[in-house]
Amino acid sequence: MKDNSTIKFAGLLAVAAVGSLALLRSAAMAQQPLVPPVAPKTEAPPAQTPASVQPAPTQAAAPAPQAAAPAMARLALTSVVVPGEPVSDGDYVSSSRYYGDWRLACDEIESRNRRVCRLEQELRLGGRWALTWKLVESSQKKPFFLVSFPAAANPASKVQLVIGGFIREFGKDEWACSGATCELYIPADTTAQQLILGANNIRFRYTLGTETIDLAASMKGFMTALDTLVDEPSAIQPASTPAVAKPVKPERKKVVSRQFETIRRTNDPMPDALKKIYGVN
Image (cartoon, rainbow, N blue to C red; front, side):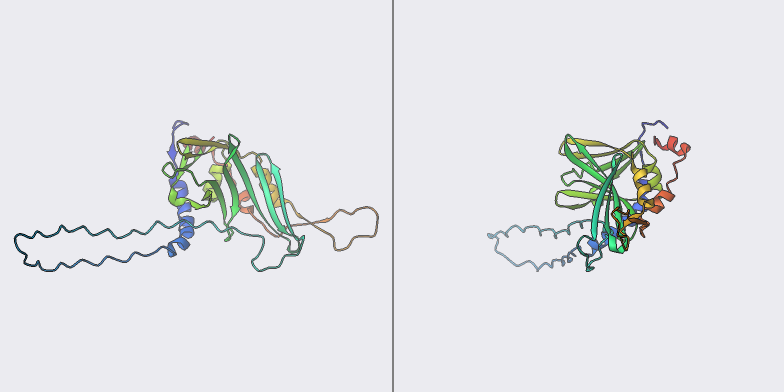
């Protein structure tokens, strides 16, 4: 098959996406208003009227209002802070480090040796923000690629994820919007990992008005950042400091969280035969 052929691979990701989408929509569907059925109209027997009097024309009954399509619920993300849990001053630490084209952003509660991180890349066009995509973890400890883009994107054109010869389209019913931004979610299962993590040519496309926004994404630095997240211990201050003038380096202790470790373990490269078939380069 030619490399420039376009193969829609909804079938490869649909199975994983359907399960997550059903979970994300369930809360919104529970709030969908119910439209009461319209009772059938009973007609009274015609009354006798003089020949000179013409009956007034009857107006058609207005159609019953249709319930609006439910808005897709936003993905609930894991948080380093437990609701209602007190956090002492200086105990909450937020940090960012850059690896190639990716940023590793982490939030940590030092006293509890707890850390939650995300890997993200921001794409700009003409100096303005155009899209951000991240590797995040849901509150149920499942990894997702989360894609954020302007809410003004034209839903008729959909949002496209292009990987080599693959095109995966996301319609309006797969967006969760709030304010000026919308989001869509791609479960980071084994199939998605082989397609996304193993590709050199990744693009996002959507439409703003009549303008087509075509953005080149990059995986440069992603695996280095991921390895750092899985392997690097957290800095923990020693229990006591010797009374010497020389500063003592803090001890290093492994962070309890094993966030995203399964992605590194299952990141098997896509076989060359599949790359040729599906146009992934």
